[in-house]
Length: 352
Length: 280
Image (cartoon, rainbow over all chains, first blue to last red; front, side, top):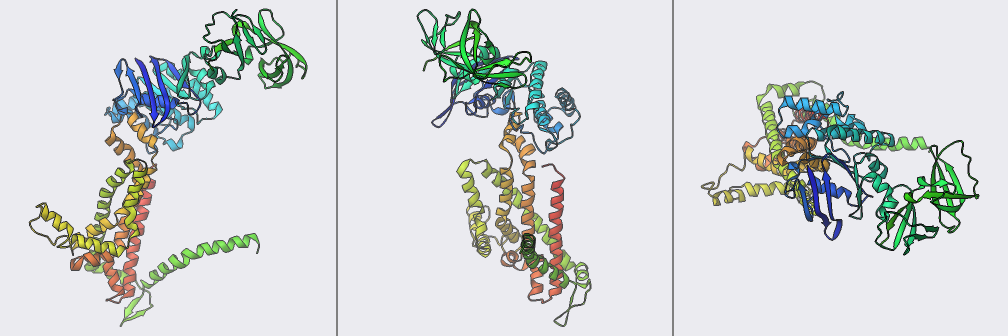
């Protein structure tokens, strides 16, 4: 199974909610569409599901155009943000709905539904109504309801956003393991960066109706291609820089020697340095920054260190240090040098 | 006046309205139904005479049963016509939808008498209905079968009470989250399957209320039978009405009214209980 979006876009009147995008979804992967609210990520999912028709472009499943295929005939099933469970049906009836409307024999239906309830860990509640279930349980019913239909792709529209933090983490883990177990392609939409990085095989980051970057979580996190992506994950330290003829980069905090493997297109660049990749103390062959300590906050597993560089004291750099009780606290207003390895620095084009 | 007594006063005032306007008149009626008439005078001596009289005279309970049957038919027609209309309006988008529903409930703001007269001119021998049927060669000549009989009452009531069915059905359709309809299609259901398994069950409470409204309104209506029923259009409402007029037997009228009231009440309670058995 391969799903290909070929220049698909969506306009509502004059408003362009999705610029033409091309995207390939391959078999058995967990692909996440990630973006801030209003970025058009749910639109992508609704286009694939067939809830809305694209303004331009084609949606191809194994080369076959789905544009005119009705929502009920597409081999995809959706887990809705608010679960959309039928309130007048029991868990068993909800899960069996897709089979029932296709005229599946009762005996077989019961067996498949029981298997699905087993997989999602709800085999104890077949007779309950949705109103009698907790948020996490409803979520599992919604999942079971889609997987009994054996869709080619399960579409998940921010399915975890209504759950509290602890349950959310459990469900992220559950979703990923379920996806591996049944081997179905999952297309997951979320606005939560942490969630996206945790569960995805691949990520599509979108903003303002356009694709910013497609890649594995590690690529997206450590090698952002755009300023938006660099700033979207974690508390990245971003600097404006100027590429020189020799390949080194001038920044307000000093010159970074030439980096290997960078193929930059513009001379104006953005330098991104992850807070957790800094170390205290000068190192050879690293980018060293002399700073004054503003403050140091202890957050349990982490120390958050805010520093102002000597060369540009209006700026604040954030450094995350894993907490180690044997390391003494740094003095506030004292001097400190921080360093980051050259290969840990991400440099990206800044076309603006 | 301290805070607590202020609240008590407000509470008493709020309670007083239904007590004075609803409970006392009904209680009064209920009491009167046990009295009797003697030489054109109401005698305040309690007995079940009026109720026994009702159950022992086939003319009374025969009319009662045929009125119940008529009202059932009125509600059934109301639902059969009103549901598709409400569904059609619900499926429209944006402003069209609300404009249509406004048009449909507009007759509720018109005078009841005017509406009955209008129906009478439509159903009459020289009315539009007959003219249309003759024009389309469905009838050879104008027919009297639509006016001054039980059919006339049935048609008139069904039309006049239609907004009372459409509105609650429409409102209960509006309460169905759109996502449920989308989810049903997403799981492979066509329009009719979704209607049968999702929309119909979820709009059942509104449909039951609509049917109940119509049933109870039709049950107590004595003006429509009077105006379009003619001599053959006798209903229980008319029987009660005549006890307070021509027949001048208020205690018997009160007893018949209590029977009607109890029937309406039991229908409502039964419908309420039935819809509570469902998880909606």
